[in-house]
Image (cartoon, rainbow, N blue to C red; front, side, top):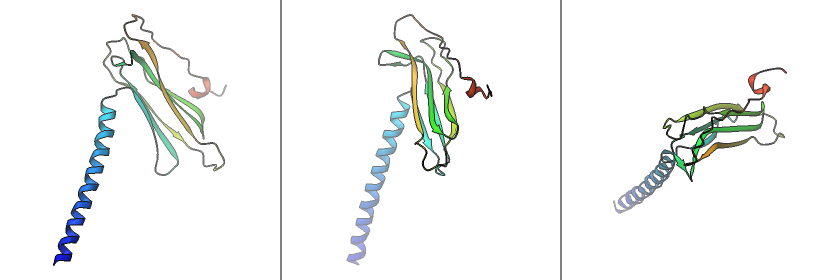
Length: 148
């Protein structure tokens, strides 16, 4: 009886430690994302065939003295070469809307190809500058599906 009781305590302690670790990881991940409206991320699908990219920004949020007017990300080295995605531009520094963009990007199945890269960023406007730009960047023809 003593052996089963002892094993039960160890199992309870182990389960308690696992629950505590998982709760800590979950809380830190969720709180980091919830408190930061300007972020981007990329998730490699479990199949290894594609990536799902995401970026979001909130123009009203002041991030180190700047407003994020627009967010963007780019994938490179996959099946489709270089691909960009952009959020809509915010209207002004009081614009509290969340603007987002997402895209699925296919990996190449060539084992000798370079690794797929993911980069994201924002078009910044200085806080209090009175200068709000409506950012317009022309999209290259190949991204629009043109054969030119």
